[in-house]
Amino acid sequence: MPDPTIDLDTFTALGDMAGAEFVTELVDTFLEEAPRMLAELHAAYTKGDTETFRRAAHSLKSNSNTFGAMQLGSRAKALELEGLAATSLAALDALDAEYARAAHALKALCDG
Image (tube, rainbow, N blue to C red; front, top):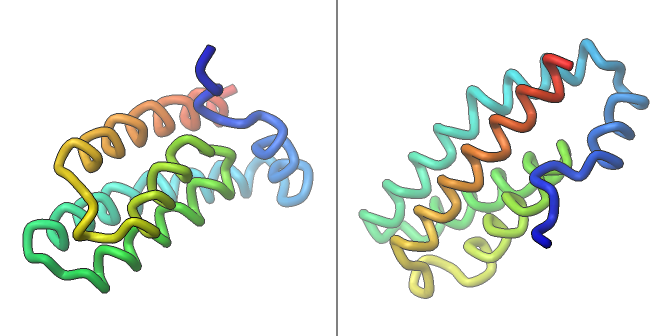
């Protein structure tokens, strides 16, 4: 059985610490910024820009883990650690698909 898209313990702990309203604002910001990070990853991949690729993967990893999107964070971490040379277009497509799942789940959690 696959891991849940969002680790509810992590998401709940964030809400307990920061408050539900603030978490909703944070999620909204993440949902605006993450597509830009994904686009930056794709552009860096196309251009062969190793440093931009690594930074975008790192940012996406960190932000994903904050909300409990552990699978998304794990995929981004793999790209960060493996680097541009070891990355395939299929890995980027898988990251995009996992982001779509995480975004949908986060929206559902915030809408309650």
